[in-house]
Length: 556
Image (cartoon, helix red, strand yellow):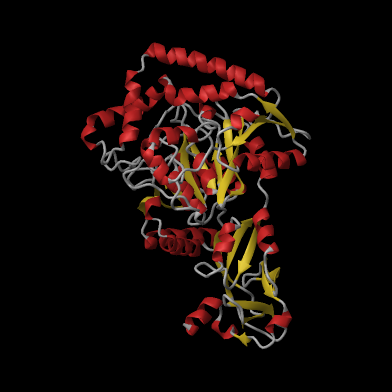
């Protein structure tokens, strides 16, 4: 797909899903299409652009030149003259920024509801939270609007929303990606993170963003961990540290553990109490003072906006750090160091710790009823990572009761690629499927694809040797068949399903439908719906309409 076509499809998808709360600012479609045209021209001239036409959403605490950075507060807004290095490096590789996304204000929260621009609803269930603070970025990816989104992560903001929306969330080692041009939450802990629907895309973006910029004093060069050996060791929490997670999640987590074990990984149970105790220090100790240092003066100067443009919960957290004394910080620093030492000792020779990413998936109403306690439950497994200099990666791991379930791999600093290798063993490969009838978006059976974990990829047409027939079924659906006597290109959609979801979906298909290779107009071959010949006898040939939607419109 050309960059221009990708932009057109993205704006059509934005209109279709109707989730305005995802965005704080969105580019004009004509402006984005013009930039896309320039990218296409560069590619046609022979320029190598590794991310040519990849669409990106950027969390609105990261600078994009010429677009306001609000960090979730209109009063805080400023207009940067240049991109943050993370953004600039993606654009240099051919990526196109579509807009700036909503967030928990000042990146303080794991719920996605602490914003004067409105709570961001979950991609799968609009009654539930998206997770935060990188809420809009995660949902923009999960809904198939953009290919990649940038977030930030201090306490789990790039991992929790990934898990709750069924996508990958890459949290690099602290310092691998410059945070220049990022509104700080906790300057020494913040990371720029990446969301994507597939691991390869997420990792490619993370690699392209990494490296010193000569400005950020915390940036450090990469020193990659050794490749995985033949029988890597992965630690998992003992049973008591899995207590209290959502119904069905413990069983789903056990399934992931068994999958890793079957791939040749040695699993060891570890008491991770020191790591969880360390996690509690992020908000329960003097470390919260770093949030006060970041934006406390702004909040203090605008107290009259608390409850309107300034979220009351966020403001309360940020200003509370003003009470911390230097001696409190150094006591907590020593406690953290000792907990980290003990935690690493218990992990032993494990190359990673595997946990659920978070503990539950509340509704927006549940968070509103008890915002502090609800948020605190979200960070049990994520809060310690940046405090203790862990790399981490959130991995989609299936569905429980129709909602995404995710796990997380945490490892030593610079073990980012090692975690990705392990994640490949967890995340079953996705399967692309062509649909041409009742499973199209807006059609009566589309929910079956969504329930199987599917996400829309693109609109396509078949090669010109296919014919479409209207079957006498309830609900109405067509039958696609290849014809030796000629036919026409038939409009359809490509959907991407996790392997397990694809298997469930195919197993439930009624006769006369089947799945077989289908050639597309652009020369690709993809798995798609085909109909048994016996079912086409007496069925009306509707090839002339060029697709099921056009035929149904004519009937209407």
